[in-house]
Amino acid sequence: MGIEENKSIVQKIHNGELDLLEALADDVVWTIQGFRSFHGKQEFIQELYTPMMNLMESMGKVGITNMIAEDDQVTVEAIAEDRLTKKGKSYNNIYCVIYKFRNGKITQIIEYSDTAMAKEVLPELFSK
Image (cartoon, rainbow, N blue to C red; front, side):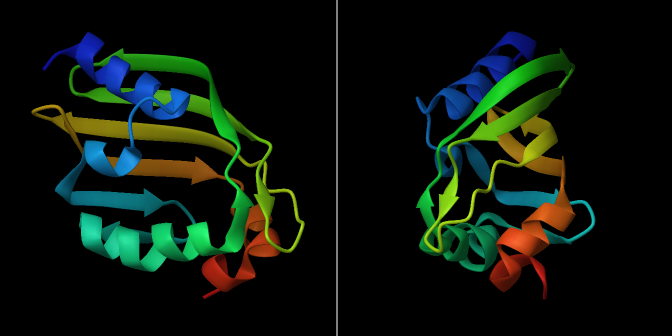
């Protein structure tokens, strides 16, 4: 797969046209800087994705404001909108995410976000 295909996958995820979980390789490593890394798709699902979905009333959308791609990497600057926890707190974080691909699957994600906000709004997940 090439640069344009990788960009298309990221764009489809952010547009809600492709399920993020389908795009992840089984051995993906997802690192949230200032928090921790998740090694493998199952660990990510069990320890972050499912618990987060259980805390959220609405995931809203994450709009891309900038995208740069080169070789097997796509870097995205994005802003979340209309995210709301079940406790009624807004969780409209900002992100810079680096996606690394292999054969059309995401093998590594490095996420930079406002971890102070994450700890304040979702302490059940991010204050461990």
